[in-house]
Image (cartoon, rainbow, N blue to C red; front, side, top):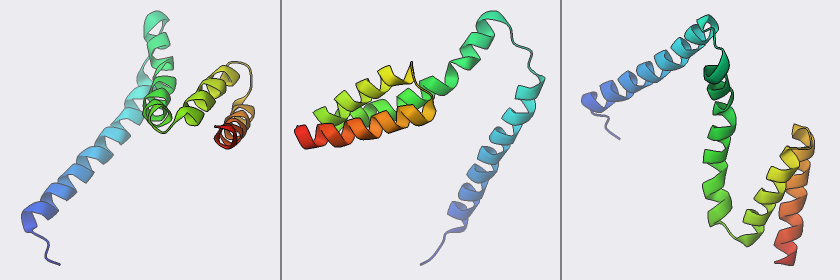
Length: 99
């Protein structure tokens, strides 16, 4: 296998930029003082990213997974994280056996 020098430089540059943006985010986040709407927007980022990752998979794999995702979303409002995960796993197993 031959590795082109240009390809290697591009990979290393992309790795450096990715690393820099992650580290810079940690340093900048500690210095931000957020209030009101800005704090609400920053607090909404983790659930939005989670939904963006989970929704395409849940909605394209089948009815059992889509229904289980809806059940898990409802459970997430009432249960802690471990309980929500347990409800989600049980819902997928039961619905896959029924549907």
